[in-house]
Image 1: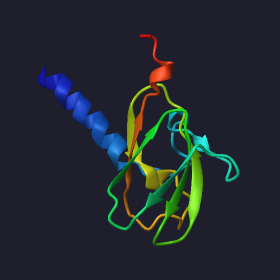
Image 2 (image 1 turned 90 degrees about the horizontal axis):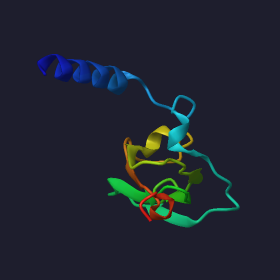
Image 3 (image 1 turned 60 degrees about the vertical axis):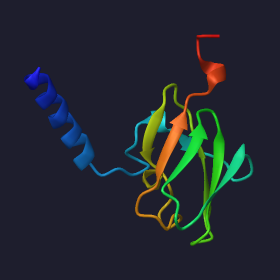
Image 4 (image 1 turned 180 degrees about the horizontal axis):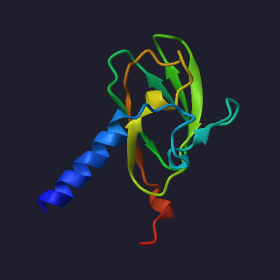
Length: 112
């Protein structure tokens, strides 16, 4: 069991030390969206620590501090957590880190 824990920690350390940018993120985080078409707007205030979205949504993020925005389409099958700064165009977000929680779209589950 200790060997499994050590292996998991080693893998986590490798992943955590790798720099993330939009070009390096796996496709399961989504894709850039169109500024003309989105499902909702999320305004990011200076004290924000996280945002919540749902898979399948195209979300326009507007940063109050910078006055800039971008649209991201979240396409993934499972609950995902990642740093929104990793997919934002450079200079759009005033935050060094902003956690995005992506919930699974309940309409996409096999349990219905």
